[in-house]
Image (tube, rainbow, N blue to C red; front, top):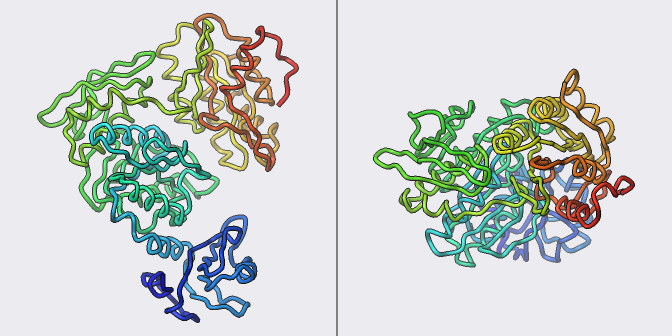
Length: 490
């Protein structure tokens, strides 16, 4: 592809390059660069691509896109924002795949992973064709699972995935769209067929200046969506609607003025049921995932399908066959007389939601085990401690992914929210030991919630990523007699 074709949509400040030069590929990581590639120097938080221009030249880069004139003697294109440029040239390189496939974007603090999975399953059931998915638990083309490093990959990888999905015959692609992805231009240039808003609560305030700024970034999705579905019960619904450029429908479990309303809600241990009310239609919906959050997730998925032109009666029937997502209200089968449930809850709202869900069906005590991630928003830690203490009968405070923070210091932040609580709690920093002790504590009818890790099969301690799957930890526990694990180590 010619350099001029790749850069035709860029806002170029100046160029010292032959626009007729043939480019062999696009690259933003010199470790993957091949001779003849166009290297895009992106400024990151831990490293700056401009520092690697020399390395790119040594590996045979044909040209560099950058934000400052390089010291090296190299063909270059100077732009104001190289992140935006990476998105634009990547879209061009892959032939603008978003124009060949209908992309559904899901944003919000909680529920994105489940909603994207539900939408994908519904679309595949209704069309009989495979759909694509880009999200936390993995990227998928039909049933084929692809490797992922980030919830929303870098713009080049997004465009590559969309191109692969279109080539595989997917008519639809469903994508989790994080605030990071919106702010860092990872989904730049994609006009979403449908944008979905689940909810918004405190998260990522280590990255955003405030909750209001976080919300404004989320709202960008709807200015790039042809149609939007918005949770009317969330306090930020009006902000999302104000930023919507296309048509908007709202869904609610509380407000009859919404376009889609859940009525006669039934919450069961293993499922939810409700009547989906729209103008002129009333359809019974059942979803085999427990909790009030599942009602909202189902409403979101139904809204997307309606906006895509499907009949609500068919959508309701398709929802009934949908399965849950790994690490979201996931029951671990133990063969014991109590229940172990794994959930990704790592925000105050999500933790409150999963504990409240369990409280609705638990025959015995609700026991919650959780920690908070290091190098992330510290303000939510005492809030989560307070919520766990208020809603649980017994709490174990432990480590999550401490990363480069001191695990004991993170725990102290959590405990600040548990002062003067009457709830019994224990602090065990080692997560494996904490799980074993929590399992020892369980009695008939109890429900143990392992919160925070969810689908993750690792624990990040320092800069080391260690294998750690809570399903395996629980399985290991039941291989031996209960109470024999007090000396176990990570």
